[in-house]
Amino acid sequence: MSTILAGPCGDCCSRTVQHSGVARGTIEVIANLQTYVARPHPNLEDTQLRKLKVILFFADVFGALYINSKLAMDYWADNGYLVLGVDYFEGDSRAIHEGKPGWNVDEWVQPYRASAAKITSPWIEAVRDRYGGPETQFFVVGYCFGAPFVMDLLATDWVTAGAFAHPAFLDENHFRNLKQPLLLSSPEDDFTFPHAARRRAEDILVEQHATHTVQIFSGARHGYATRADPELRTERWAKEETARATLNWFEFHGNCR
Image 1 (cartoon, rainbow, N blue to C red):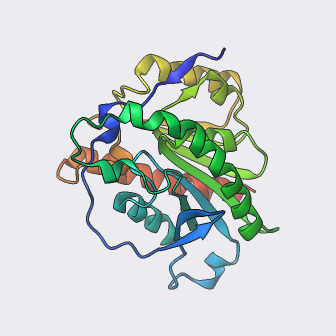
Image 2: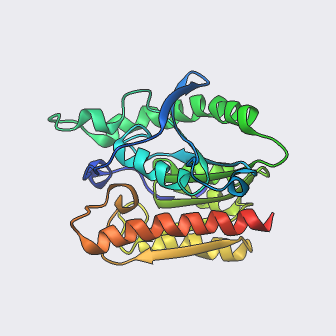
């Protein structure tokens, strides 16, 4: 059995600061699942839109339909990507349980580990059928609960590159099976992916000669990449830098193909 490196969700996974902004994408149904769709900004030059670049977004426990997730997807869409975020919680994300006494994230999330994987697989195939073509490039990004989806897809041949931040539910085999480039972003101290586990993951990536980059942010905490407190300067910067680095990672590896 493969050794666990990134553990299960905890209280920090259910803590959030809701971001302000107006989401510009639409909610559409793909493979019977609600999907947030953020399209490239119409003001982009035509040359930037000729090659379709698609990001599959795998959310943390707050889900793809949470405003923070939508605004993150809009950011990449404004930079030329078609971004698709699947609601694998089917309307029952952490966000709707805000303030409920006695609610426990560990108990809530366990059934979704199996059900989300089961229903997301046909969603992925439907996205490929709808948007795939000779010039299409697919990228994947995920946070916490969404990290295993990223790692599973980076073990395939059709994804160009991927990124995750503060992951949960990963084991050594996820890193051993990696085929495509990975950007790994973490806070310095992460309860789901502690220092020793992260170093072990890095060792495996080096042993496998995997294409990867690791960035660590002091002053940040688990969830910073999607739920940073904008009033905390260091945490806000870490969130923004992770989004920029992810964009640059996808641009670089997309241009290498």
